[in-house]
Amino acid sequence: MKAHRQNKPFIWMMGAHPIKCGLNPIIIDLMEKGVITALATNGAGAIHDVELAYWGQTSEDVTANLQNGSFGMVKETAEIINETISLARKKNLGYGEALGQRISQDLPPYCHLSLLAKGYQLNLPVTVHVGLGTDIMHQHPNADGAAIGELSLRDFRILAQIVTQLGGKISTDLPNSTDSNHGGIVANVGSCVILPEVFLKALTVARNLGYEVTHFYTANFDMLPHYRPRVNVVQRPTMAGGKGYNFTGHHEIMIPLLAAAIIETLEELATNHK
Image 1 (cartoon, helix red, strand yellow):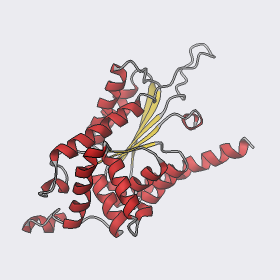
Image 2 (tube, rainbow, N blue to C red):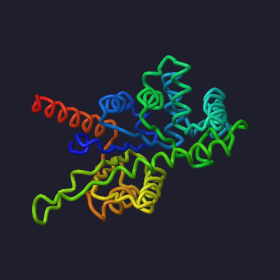
Image 3 (cartoon, rainbow, N blue to C red):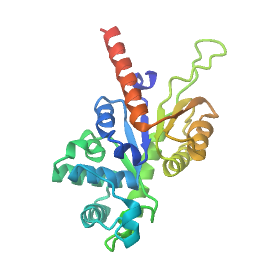
């Protein structure tokens, strides 16, 4: 909890599956408590979050709908997201901020379950990192590739700026100390390709600009072990100092346990400081 006490970033990177597992309320609680200070997701994460906010449910039978060409062709989701992104291009907004603003203004029935809306309301950065052609929104005629790319690039730069603040320092109080608890935290939850790659590039941008981003913690949570999270989140970023951890298990079990442990520790610290 040293990172929390020293106001270091806790960057929560996630794919879409944790949203589909119903974990938004737990993640929102960590955002409201100031544990998570920045959230990054992919295009699919934004889609499921938007659908959850407006209709209280998300997902479809991909196998069945692919057979007749109806997979991903829902009109309402595409209208909300694509129109919002196109309009936000002129307002100099990022992808996540634009959708968070839209949801907060519309106040759909399940707005309280939206990570995008909660980030906007808390002034907490929620960045969306899109791979063009990977999301159902890109199948629709109102998809504006220039706007999608520009807003997602803005979000990448926002994330890179946050990454510059991750670094800590080895304690010099004791000889041969290897204490690296002073840096921030990066957690990757259920993204096996896009977020690990985005984080690696954001980290190298930060270091290229002269920021000493070392001695921080990383952790990967997923149901199955994958190459990119292991190498690009757990191993490579912490080679210059810090430590990475890998946890394998179902999101709907692991994340509630993680959140409970964090909250319990914070409550104990608060009690001890009274």
